[in-house]
Image (cartoon, rainbow, N blue to C red; front, top):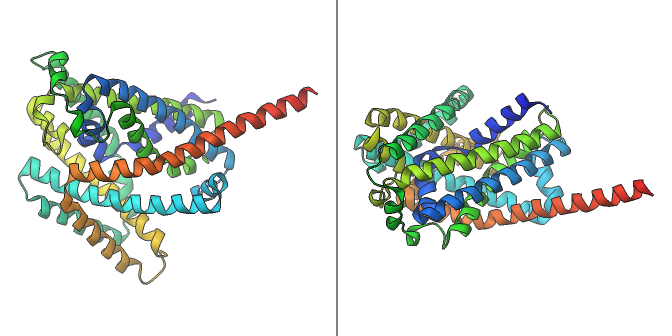
Length: 360
């Protein structure tokens, strides 16, 4: 097992999962921080789930030697359930597109005072123009922003904690479980892991077919999952320091930046916009490609229509869309998680049978 390979896989896992929604703080606020102290325990549960399922997805991809997640899903779930999950993931991409367009409007409004509708429209136009030009280098370059995004958000969270005027115990009284994405901290943590894994599971399976050994891939999944859990925990504590001020705030980390390290807020805004742009391009392209073949004459027309519909869905609002779309797909994600757990049990039973036959 190569530790260099483990760290490469772990970094890729973190980079795939962490996007604009995570870094904005809105997801962590709704799924963890609204529960106060219990949210810290929830982040530990989520981290353990990311570690175990990351290990399973990457191991499955490595053992299957397949570059297509469809083959693996159909093998694990069967023709009908596999097909259903493929359809669900397709519409999940559309939902994420709406969240990204709403997020762009929220960033430009909160930081620069631009109308949210105009901000969202600007992102839609940029997305369509980029997809028309098929500028693949733009996506790869913007993907380099991820480490900077993580670094800036961590600095903001840590500085918020160091500069707090009161203790966290006092802030805990401002917890608002009624505003959270789910009824209790445990189901909320599981939902958070579920919808994220539903979204990145297919990518992790494809990533698992890379040149590293199965053990390296599995270990990378564990390290990456634990890292994600730690990031959630740090941001959660950072937001706990200002929990009394976060109700109704669309972008909590940007709010914290303006409160504690104001010179960082313009940089965070730019990086958030870049990440939103990157995600919007990826999900709208993937959504369109699942409906129409890329070589079809209708591809561009369908892509424009998909972006337009996604733009109108963004009127619901960034935080509201997160509270609707992610929990819904989180429940669907339970199916994928259940399938992976069943596959793990089957492999264990098969291994025991093989070991017994070898002993005899």
